[in-house]
Length: 271
Image 1: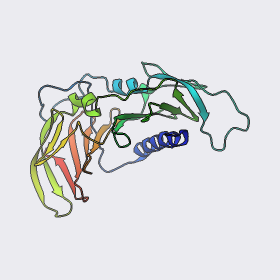
Image 2: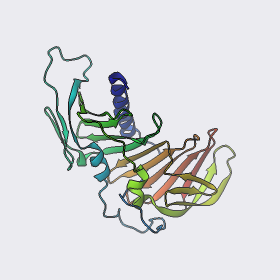
Image 3: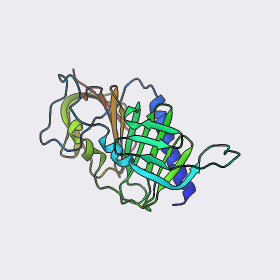
Image 4: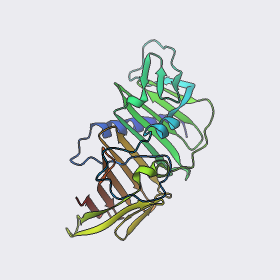
């Protein structure tokens, strides 16, 4: 993949985060998180006062950390009239970001996303975005092993190539996503409503008679709005997709599913 295409991919990543941060949909979509799968399936978290004691940021910081000191370029349009030294762009394991005059703590981000895509090469490629203070930060992996990061007007790459990870987004956040509940679902085409069972367990999302193998998703995305909401979405190789919403306490509240052919099903948690 050429450098211009890499820059466009990373710029698109940041644009998508801006769109997520600025959208004010009637429903807040949301999933939440843990690094290891829970052995049992909890019921819907209606009575829990808050999220489990887990580090929501750990997978994001693990993906973002690195010393990006190669091929640093200015992304300003128009470019600076006088070239200046750029980079390195450094993200430490604890989330401290430094790039030129920019310093930020990623853990203070107001919106963050972590995504995985298998579309280009079949290998799982990660991307991360964080909106922190007045800055937009993003990283993206590419099929040739390149990993690039950008913040403000600076974009750099790691000197060494990276190997794609093997863990899905679900695998990293299963402990909070795994749940079961009863939901009321409406088919937007037929207007028919039914009460049905919803569950995520052992890597499978089930809603009524429909199921999704979360280990084979072509795309996965998790968006975190700390202390507000979470959303988890995915697309299958056969063009089915879903979005799951959780509230600030990790309680599943909403699900939207599309079958091939764009038949939309919307589900709400039964109180």
